[in-house]
Amino acid sequence: MAKKYLLFLVLAAGVATGAFAQSLWSIGGGLVFDTGSLASGESWVGGQTASTSLRQTGFGAGVFVDATFVELSLALMRASRTLECSLRGELWSRSGTLLDATLLGKLPIFLGWGDIFPLLGLGGKLGISEYVENGLSLRIVFGVGSDVDLTRNMFVRASLLGSYRFPTGEWDWLDGGWGVTIRAGFGLRL
Image (tube, rainbow, N blue to C red; front, side):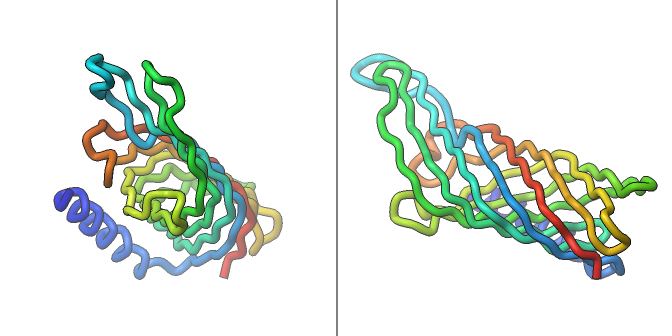
């Protein structure tokens, strides 16, 4: 677990350092949809081996601040988590509020109507209600985004992100999981 936090800090410091060398800043906000597996693996249930998976789906709103080569986003999401076992079906489902933070490096390819950029970085989710585990869930995030210019200083941003989530907390005995995040919103260049 300590290695994961150290990796997160080292990568975050590297990406944040590059942000201060940038001159083109923008801010914005929009909607976020997130779904995927938090953890999955084999478990021992009633003397038999069973496939177990913990899935999460969330929807919310977020804000972002970015420079040319880096983006920081924060979102509040209402999420539901479901634990399923191949022998027993759905064991439980809970919902609650999550805080999502993502730090991404980006490499924009400027086009006449806007730009397209590959994204790579780190993210974390923190449960902030009693129905969702309060531990920090870390993930590696990758994907693609695009800004479509409306005016010189206004744009529409859309991102499609994949992620690998490390298992944490009471689920650290399972393997991590893969997820997808879709974001759409408006932004202003400063």
